[in-house]
Image (spheres, rainbow, N blue to C red):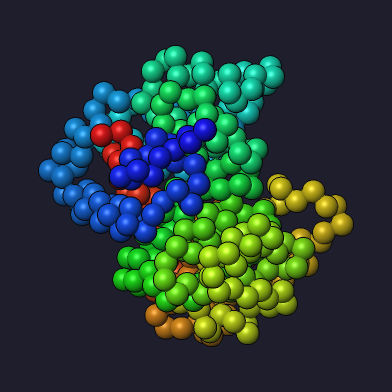
Length: 321
Ligand code: CP
């Protein structure tokens, strides 16, 4: 079953990065920048608050979240929507009693929300939810699967900073085996002309074969580095760094602290970066980016998180208007 449609960019559900065309992305980023400008003045905020008035968003989060949950809730409020959510659906919903995601979604649709934002611990949960839902499902992260709205805000931030999405060398590092933000970002950036990926990780946490096959099939260039990042960081236009996903690593033999020693971005690494590059991180971070680099002009991760709200406002409007 085709659960989402790319026809005329009218999406029914937001499930994975592959569903977006570059044509859609350019139009969408223009819409985001308009909303961001409009939000700067009080009159603009009043106009935005009318746009989705009387609509209802359900926030259904089975995994912890700060940015995604709050930015969706804030985006919905700023567009005039009502938000209903639970603190922790894994423990405070009937999932505890063994209810399946399909049954939960069918029940929630009976309460007539206009969209459901779903974060779940299982890969494919958003797709399963969409298959039974009568309202749009927005994948806010499905285990180690994908996080497409994060990729939208990441690419929007790159575009804002560098004013182009073509011919970029993008260094992506950290836990590439378990990171859903990196997977979604690679799928999205691979759509743009001349993207050149450098994957930099401890070998046990390297990028999974399916994604590399996707790049090979689409003739997108990439290399992998397993020792340290000093050799490659100077070539990157975008450095996208991520946390080791301890909660998803099942091998007790892996010494995570030892693994990340060579993959920490500090002032010394920063001194090797291009002056007009951009340093990104989906957050939350642990030790992999030192706090000492936060004030550098290239450090974009808090701006990235802030952009998330405008991206989600535009997304809600695109889905629900
Ligand atoms: N980047 C991100 O998804 O953050 P949260 O887990 O806090 O939502």
